[in-house]
Image 1 (cartoon, rainbow, N blue to C red):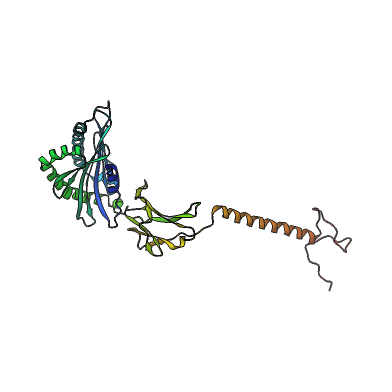
Image 2: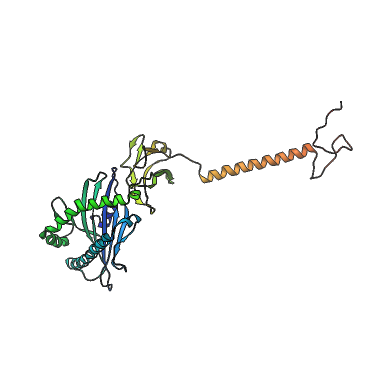
Length: 355
């Protein structure tokens, strides 16, 4: 089974490549709900990994709304134009949903029609790639090939759209101009407006954890968090050699506070942990970061050591009190006469010989 469009969207949104590049993406979804009337349409725009605009067809304003403060500098004309375009797109998706139900021979129900459109450019402003992909009910439907200006159908039902869109070549030609030029121009403008946020670097905080299984197997996990931008490399090495095939990764994920997190894990046996090191590369680091797991006292052993020290201290205090009582003639908490003297009282002043 081919991966769903939702997976592709997520994979595209969080690249793992090392060089820094920038992206402008719009993720649009139209959902039909029985008894709702018009489908609900949502359009969300992202610069790199930050959501910056949003449109909801059921909102009272019926306008595209800013999601970041740095868009306060944009003119009112911009919002008028974009709101009009996104409203027209919502209508196009409404028609598309009806056609897709016909192509798939479906009756009314809950269905989703999705689109991912955008571009990527290098840090120097060079165009890298553009993309326009569609999905229906979570599965790939059709996508644009910018090289040939043709449409690639992912399923048989998409041949209907492919035939219709390729019959009007201007559709692909307009998209090529937008993706390779206009999209890049707007991306550069957005990066300039939001440079304090979008072009910042925050180094990762990294730690290595140790997880032992009852069968003697050990998992070493290298976890990085609080970093920006999202591109990062975590590599496990054994005796200096990369262990890519034996490493388990999770994709880079948003942390919810504008930064990202990621971890990489490797399995070994107890006693072999010292052979492994984690190598971290990130734009926020001035040099490679190399970490390894350092054994520490567990909480149980820490508690045992602390209790042993407390007990030892208590024994010392008790012994000291007993010795003091014995040497000072104190018994039972009352004073007694000193041995060899019938009338002298105990004193803490040392006796000296008479001159």
